[in-house]
Length: 410
Image (cartoon, rainbow, N blue to C red; front, side, top):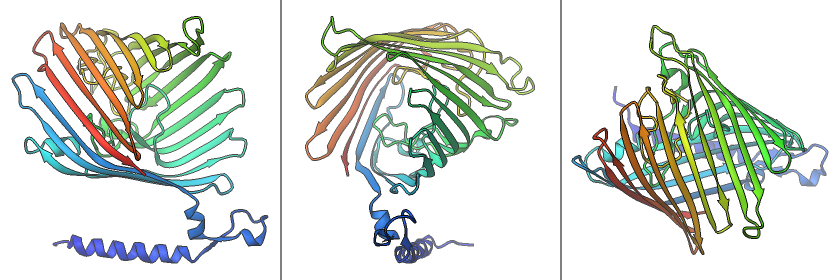
């Protein structure tokens, strides 16, 4: 049977037109106790919502030593909408669409943007008036701790907090998308996946829990727990502090972050007989001087065999491109890095350098990053990066990569 896609498109457009026309004639009372004169049509209610978006172009080119050089450019449009509040309830949605402009080789574009269109958000949300209880159902960004991956997730989310800053977030998801972006770094659109796709025996639901515990006004502790049956229990804590150091400069802060993680293997020995538990972490500390910042840090995972980034579980590599940390499920690496920030009017630069060693491969690497953001007149923004990576051994080809996006916000 041959499907006439143009007829389907016309049918969908007709249905959408009829639906919008029908709902626009409905009346909506925001609160039954309000004055009857405040009752508005549904279309008037929707007009009070918040819409935003961006349209633009992007490009990326990578020069590999002794290998092909992928390159591409694309156009994109991203938009989202959230309804006004009604008795604590809001609903929202958003999408991203991309189109190919140029590619250096056949397949460069489709390997990055595996899907040309993505419904990133489609959710119903509730928050009480003191804003201490909240819940969300549907598709949106729900990752709140270092162990949970993905730009967007599909499931349910519950939050509870106190005026003193204590909070608890519980999430259960059944689908996720690792990347859904138009950005210069070509993460692209990877397509939605069931969380159970990671292993044949993997559970149907991925659970996460995160608590935020303030310790005074300058320090916080955030224990977290992520779990998927027959995959992994990934848990630990994040420690953050931000301490004023006015003796160095007025308004300056000494900021420190420590992430500790346990990777507790749940994969059946019949699937991965060599898998074991592992542990790792990231430590970063430095000065924030307002328009300037500098931090140093280290990132590591122990010499234990396990896929620390299986499925919707996250790998929180602090640098932009180097894939040695980790390279595979053998882990066993140490990375040292420094990051900076320089604000020069409307231009912000983010330089970084990383030097590390993957002991499982007996290979060192050097990475140099320069990211930038430039606010242009008229709601235009230019963002981009230039990255060079050099490997001691021929595990991967050395490369230089650069890219940018130029977008207009509306």
